[in-house]
Amino acid sequence: MKKLLFLLVFTVTPIVLFADIKIGALFSVSGPASFLGLPEKNTLEMEVEKINKSGGINGEKIKLYIYDTKGNDAETRKKFLRLVNKDKVIAVIGPTRSGSTLAIKDLAKKFHIPVISCASSDKIINPLYKEVFKVAPSDGHAVEKIYEYLINKGLKNIAILTAQNGFGYSGREALIRLAKKMGLNIVADEKFKDTDKDMKSQLSKIAEKNPDAIICWGVGPAPAIIAKNFKELGLKSLLIMSHGVASKKFIELAGDAANGIIFPAGRLIVADQLDDTDKFKKLLLSYKSEYENTFHSPVSTFGGHAYDAIHILVKVLRNNGKDANSIIKGIESIKNHLGTYGEFNFSENDHNGLSKDAFIMVKIEKGNWKLIK
Image 1 (spheres, helix red, strand yellow):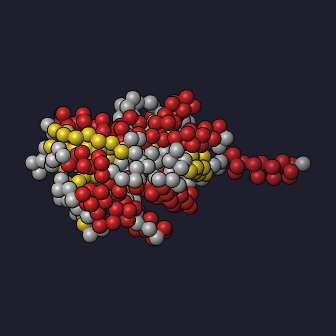
Image 2: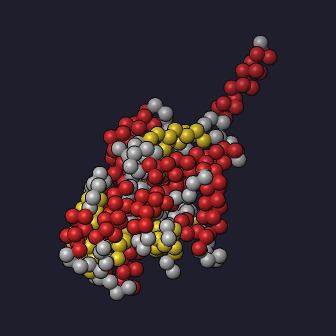
Image 3: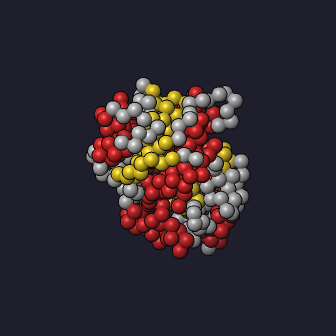
């Protein structure tokens, strides 16, 4: 009997001491935003495998539950509820898209589940819910960077062309608000849908106003179509895209029409062009090399969002605990954390932790990225 009790204790104890840490993830792995979500999924799996091989978190391994939202808001809500009710995760990384994040914001609050979104809309953290964070820089930061660039070039009359989705709505609001603040004139304001196959009508209306620059705000195939339409119409304005095109997929879709386009982006896509004194260069080159060697495809700034999210979460889990309140307080206390998109300094009132300095300006030349210094 004593021997049997000993064996029972011996076999049960390790399970109790080393239970899995369940973390959920919601990414647009398929659908129009797959070029954003797939690098996020790949990165998260790659980083978690490394973390587990090195001993996990205080001896406990991470168990991932990753679901494809297909970029659909209703599907995102459904999968979030599954993560909470069936999988019993302690935190969620993602979603990929702004609209999808906004679709679960109320659920994160209701179930008191920390969410670290990979999307950029300012509305994700404004109004602020204590459970909801994001690691992608805010649209306002990107707009500030674009407007500073235009002002330095002496360009003040702009046209905006924005997507009719969560990302586009948030970007349009920031473009209008900051134009007034920074002294730029919006001479045309047009919109498009993700499913539109031709935007010559909107571009022709914009051309009548003769703007110095046209700023397109969207993700997926639509901005690539706009780039082609812009070239076909022979427009002479400067074409600027949002950070939503910071993927080789955009260049592949736009072809030669991508050349000459300017946009704000994270440092990752031009990591090898950074000065050796840049404090982010070593981290970025390491991640870039590992990702490209593992998946045999170009690194993406969107995958970098998943990298930042998991390393922020792991830091908190190691130092603060696994219950929701500890995770929330832990993230809010993170300072001077270097990630792929910048230096994170969170607080109770700032659930993004980044500034406009997270962005640099990039130009597409000969089908590749070039850092604008």
